[in-house]
Length: 317
Image (cartoon, rainbow, N blue to C red; front, side, top):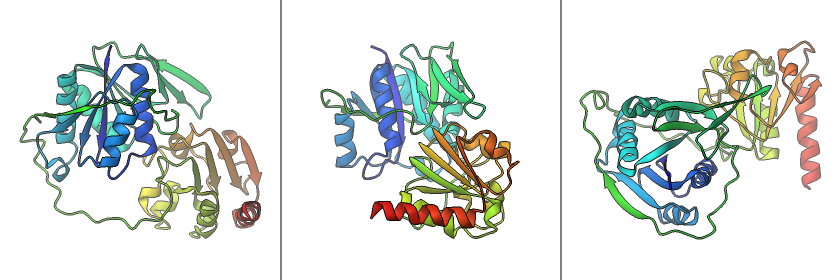
């Protein structure tokens, strides 16, 4: 059976849904092996067993987080070689994509990003041009490296739990990889909302909000959704840059994406076009966002969003 390596970075106390999706997909492709950086809590170890992981690989070096992504990429490449993996799976975050590229160079492997699914033969599927087309591609190299968009695989535990063993992988030393060191970190204050890239529902605001994200946040809280934003909104300082969705921001693929006061230019489309259902609210009937929206509401966001929030709260009791 083919080996499939899944890289998980600092899983914390429990695995995120996107991580469970990776483990589920890996099990459908072959024997899943996990390369994990950071502490493995009892909850994470239990999840590994529940999702049928056959082995857990840990880095020999304990300071990978003190540097940028190069040492992590070196660890993933070494883990893939140690496990004899034919496929390496990572999340579709900006850091995941960078690690994938570096691993591809180290292993002389084909790299496929933004996948929404992978077949047993390694064929990856992508949804492109605002979901208008589905494309398929497969690496012709011995090893393929794939990043998977969240919310495209239903997490499913294995039929029978496993008892994965743990082993250590030597991380290749490199002066270039350790040339830049992270000297300090500042923990972001938790909002209580879901992580943007993992959320099943995203409510995003743009220039049309004129700096007031209150209606977007209230609707998001009523729906249990994450809050996103266009580049125009983050550049204006109305909301932090980590909320940006788009070509130069985060890529999301929720079940429901509500676009409020966003024109829908290509920069924004690139980050949310694979959303299952897109609802657009904009007072400009000619806004490009209506070309990709499944449902469109022509109206002022300051009228529409509060009404939607009130109705949702009413129905929830």
